Image (tube, rainbow, N blue to C red; front, top):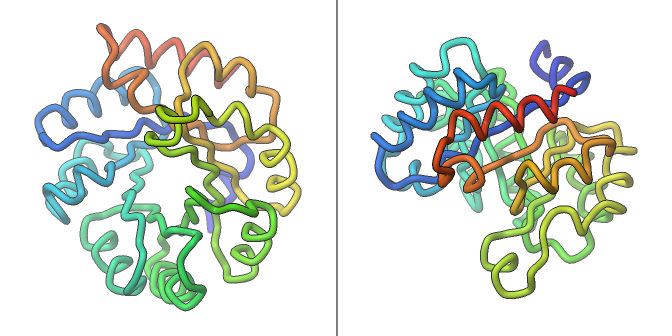
Length: 222
């Protein structure tokens, strides 16, 4: 799969459009594209607010860029793969903590459509063990993710998972990292074997999102 090879061989910025309002998402999406972002993420709040139409609108703005639909699929994997397909997405996400049957269902249907599947390991206790299991199920991308609530309560960011990032990358999968990333702490993990750096609030809530995104692209692309 061409997209799979491209992501494996590169470092990419993914901008998480975690908005409830579509107009806000559209504006940041346009600025992110102008800044050189590689992937536009239709955030879970946006999907819950606008569904397939939300994915389609970001698809229109993205043009040839990659669109990830952060479905965080927990059941009915094949149905949610269909939703992402109808919206024009290139990547969907499943929760790595869910049953293997759900992940297998998503992978089977998504691959029929040429869609990649990312397993989000948010709240998974044994990251490496689950990553190994998930790879065998055919998942394309492993997402190491420290959730917002955990960041707030425990003060942990993705930078605290350096060892896990290295070990997961040895499985030969695309590695995506998310959780409190900004231009300051991305520098700390830029030399790690990471393919996708997911940035949300550091760009979407910045005074100048365009300039912030440009600076982060510069760091990632070296």
